[in-house]
Length: 112
Ligand code: AMP
Image 1 (cartoon, rainbow, N blue to C red):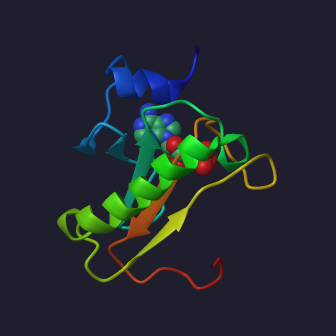
Image 2: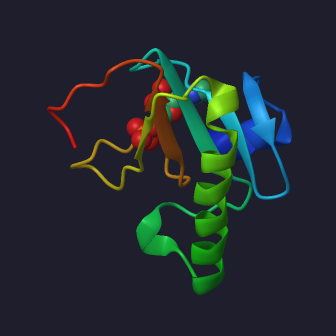
Image 3: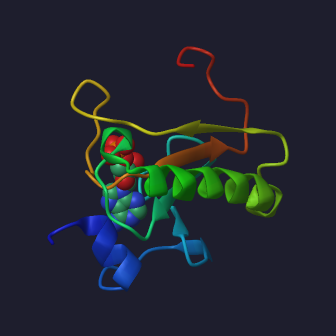
């Protein structure tokens, strides 16, 4: 499958990986939109929240809990914002579900 995030997971494309476990990797976004901008990417490929099975929902729930666990180690003690885009209106550019993790500074209150 020609998916950039699957290639990053397999190590075929380099990335700045800050965390990895059996469920997911967390990398630095290549075009940060906040002081700290990470992407939590499940190792299993599915396009977005509308394509999740019940099993995927459990996986994503686990990912959210782990993001909470590692947040402080990523410099996000002051708080963070999670975003997952789906589809054209949200400007999703990579059709492999991922959760943006933004923080490290006061974020704009314009969105969310
Ligand atoms: P989205 O627009 O929600 O699909 O988010 C995709 C994100 O992936 C964007 O914020 C991109 O900057 C980021 N991105 C694309 N390619 C890479 C890469 N090779 N390494 C790290 N982040 C990437």
